[in-house]
Image (cartoon, rainbow, N blue to C red; front, side, top):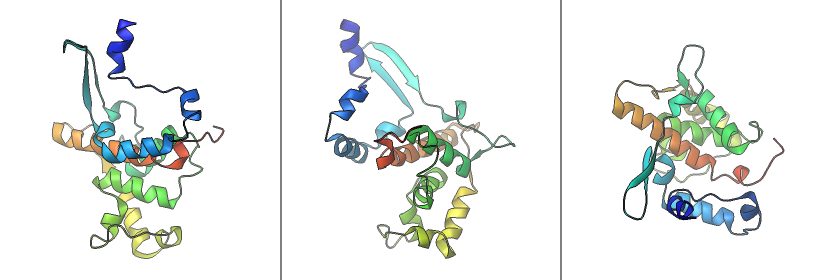
Length: 184
């Protein structure tokens, strides 16, 4: 029992039954991600007991599990698909051009698609039709053709790449597709 209390400060696990019985789950999760986005992009955390002694630590390194292309590169396009499938479990069914645009923007630049498409109007809303042609399609193609330096020998570049993955995960986990089982 004492161990459970100590770890509960670091591990806030939720059962599927808790989630199913919580009508406010989406709102709470959304507000948590908006109010505390650094929780998901955090790359290291020490869990401490009541006396302040470190009882466990973890370090996030996406290069250890993320897929690479045939040349050993972490492709934004491939990584976006993999993250989507990993966090939604829908095998990419709902990974449309709308979701791809934001995931690719976060992975490639650390910014959302709207702020890249039109910095003067970052809250503009784009339709799937708009994203499939013209300058917006070109922007999406450019973003998806980039690579992340998840395995860079330079710590600051590696850290930035890992944080970008965290931003993409933050976006993905706030879509409705992560809150319902799609059968996969």
